[in-house]
Length: 284
Ligand code: SAM
Image (cartoon, rainbow, N blue to C red; front, side, top):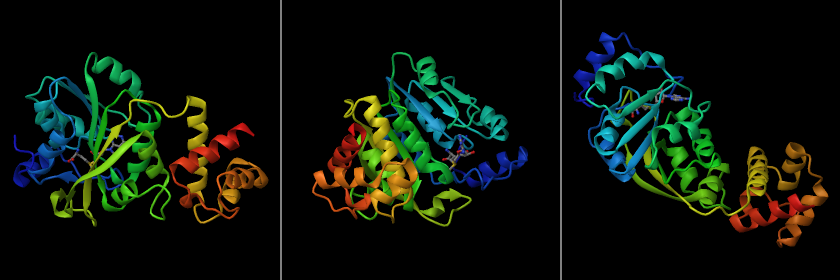
């Protein structure tokens, strides 16, 4: 079944009485060039199990299933299940899990579905929840090797930004702490049905094997990072004292030991300084 043929897609959707949910970020890929490229760049190949987030009608799922040993796909919208039963009928290596990915036990899922396989994540992410999903995947320390995702332009810019720049955010720190990120290719808004208002890009995050901080320090580090970016226009001392209750004097002293002014904002700290300031605050 050609899931990028507009006539075919319209026919399936109307036979199942399906209407797009904007709230769930449902923009399905109809450009035939995109999904094979995501699957190939995204490690969908022999020896790999691929976790997909958000199947839509299965256009990417099918490309992943053609190449990988196994695909486990988490999709929140139960109205898509009868459609997927039809569109993915030819594959016996796909498991659909009808859950909210943010509430799903992904460690267990990977353990159960991908025994003995390398694991990669591939997805055309719902735009309303892009950063929380990427952050959750990273912070859960799942046994995954890469995350290859389509995101909207603004999210792509944040992901590609330099830590310690105005364009950075908590997600920038997240991807650079846990791995390395690169943009693979741009995708125009016309590649989707319905077409969104902005263009997108496909990004790949390769996950580091080694852990930079112990678990406790890592948790504290990301609390500091999220608190700092939740009030990015304030000084770091102000945001950490209001969000985490850390006395400003303690923040001043941690900043000073890194040669930073008391008025420093989080977006002025590069990765090494962020880690050092967080370590000092944790010790005090
Ligand atoms: N992969 C399909 C494609 O490329 O055509 C669909 C991508 S569409 C941008 C995002 C998909 O994620 C939708 O099918 C939507 O229902 C699903 N979704 C939205 N929120 C979700 C969540 N919290 N957990 C799992 N799936 C979700």
